[in-house]
Amino acid sequence: MKRIWDYDEDKALLRWPPPSLEFTDSDIWRVFRIQSEIVAGFEQLSRVGPACALFGSARTPADHRHYALARETARQLAGNGMAVITGGGPGRERTFHRLQH
Image 1 (cartoon, helix red, strand yellow):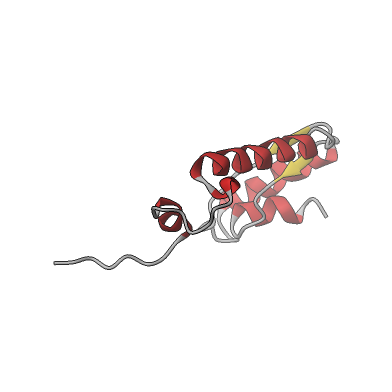
Image 2 (image 1 turned 120 degrees about the vertical axis):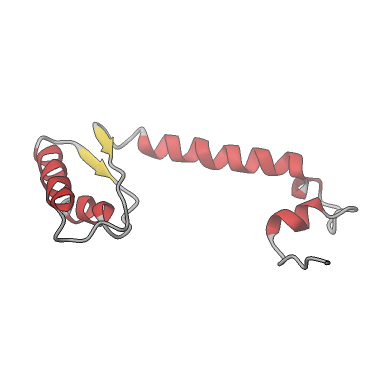
């Protein structure tokens, strides 16, 4: 049975010959573009000061005891001058994020 794949960026990068003659569109240059994004992120984070990254589950309901513990943890960290960095998603991460504002 033949499998039909959806189009995505990786498939386009693997196509040969490359659709563009621009050398910066190659796989090798893609690595440098990704690396530059990581460096830019570190530069921005270097100006934040004392910080803590908190991760959680998007599936934690607001009435769960871990949700309350997450709120208290984030509140204490922020109250002691720490920047609280989260993904801002639902569940515990939203809890951490809410306490920063």
